[in-house]
Image 1 (cartoon, helix red, strand yellow):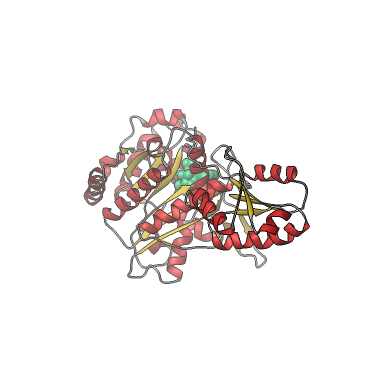
Image 2 (cartoon, protein in one colour):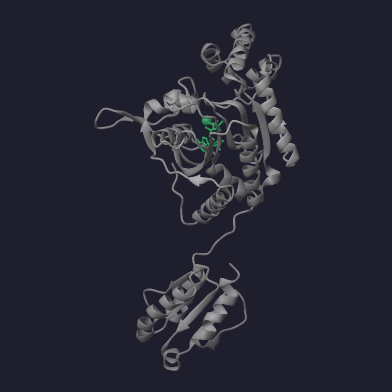
Length: 417
Ligand code: ATP
Ligand code: MG
């Protein structure tokens, strides 16, 4: 579990700002759920035989003896909240959320025990138009972040529950013929959840799968049509994708469309965004049958990717440093700094605290990253003037009036940011 330090928070703030802005521009509304839920919610939704439920959840009994779990993902909570508050009943909803998730995994680059997701869910819409919409939304995010060339869209259809069940049997029959060479995980999954073997990262398993039956051979007609409608829309929008028949996703609730955006820039943890359709989940969790589709994006991986591509604008903590020479200036300075903040709300004004000579104050000003120092001393107080000293170029300092100071800071800082 990581601390996000002041040096890193500008990157996070930039990422979060773009996510909020783009989600809003598609008409999605924010929902905030608690970070703990009853354990049962995740078991029922994500599925008993999944990595998450089998070995990754932070589960504990509270003081009443109720089993609670730190949320490992947001979809289950979002559906629970939607059902509980009647948001999903006979209506459509476009929702997003952002926040920490918890999984007890082996920490490594791009994989942590507390990590953050941005998630987005659309409810009540059965057709491929909404699947296309959310994929277009993610594609816009990559363009906004300037990483469109670093991510690739993989797509699959898990078809209907019936089609998938038939395929599951066929896959199980095939894999049973190779049971002696299956690894431990796959042996265990052979009976309980053979589809999970498809996305095994073990190269030996992948080799066995080369001749396995393909899911697309088992697609039902309606799912095939749904998938083709999605592809048509992506083609029209100029979104490139590859069909990956092994893409099954690690959670039980998906049907039809599943997708991942992957990058080769982060090593093994290459999936930055993953999602799909889950038409059965709302009903399964006690609501009225409601089609749904959504995705979750790992923010740590996104930040890592942006850093690797130098897409994070580094940010100083201040724009203007107010230096105060002498006791009278220290008193007057409080008011000057306050007036600057009122006049120029987008300019970050750092007021020197703790006294000291000019050299010491200028050192601090420099370290703050501010572009300009405003110096106030006895002679400035006497003349009602302000000394402006650019800190990042050699233009030299000058004495100005209040009006000129505001105009100068507006032109050099406020209008540039
Ligand atoms: P993976 O195959 O990497 O384990 P997953 O299938 O478990 O991913 P999802 O449950 O679909 O992942 O979560 C969606 C996204 O959340 C992932 O694509 C990834 O970007 C991010 N994510 C998942 N687990 C972690 C983690 N432990 N640390 C950081 N990010 C994570
Ligand atoms: Mg995982």
